[in-house]
Image (tube, rainbow, N blue to C red):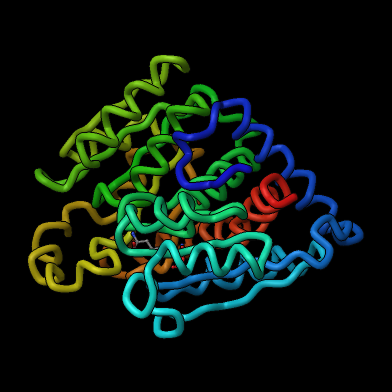
Length: 305
Ligand code: CP
Ligand code: NVA
């Protein structure tokens, strides 16, 4: 039995297999609909934080392949509060065929996986967001027909999304650059992990502070909120620090003219990205959002037996 907790747990070949399946399932779905590959299978979706994309894309992915999904809201099961994570995990394992969870502490998703006897999928933790990175890689593949040798630049906070993106780039052969204010880089442990992974793929990883230098030659520009869920107390401080890291038309003009712009969404228009860029011809953010469903369907079909 496999879980999907981090991109780092999967080899390049395994990731490419899942993404290849995502391409096929998307194509099938657009033509005649999918086969009932997960008929009568049910996914429990445990949320400690809000969501639009993760909730709806997983639910629809299950429906497309003949299965179903149960939404468990933050107040409902009180993960680790009303009941221990170990007990929640063992109880759910008796009812459903898979568990997807969105948590604060990464340790909590690891505990869920440790005690589960069904696959556990990480729908975002404070540390990483692997399903997002899979949708991102699918979107990049659709645009460029490959990953190898492309330059991806992430502008902004070195958060959960940035960590999974760095891992995915290291595995799939994209050179990864982050431009973040001092002190807001990807956590050191994750960076070292990415560097380790990059040795096998000859990927170049760079940490810079100047966003203009960072986007030069980039075919993919990526940004995310300056204030992730759970960081609300730091909102004021962050809003003062991050404005030089806005993805706007002036910054985009420095990138490769073929560059696409990605954002995991929700977007804070006027903060990390301008309307002009988010709605402009280089933006692929809604294709990317749709691809959550296709990438996750491939993950579900791979994991749930
Ligand atoms: N990108 C993403 O995970 O969106 P939600 O928070 O809406 O699920
Ligand atoms: N970094 C953001 C991603 C939201 C999908 C957060 O954690 O809030």
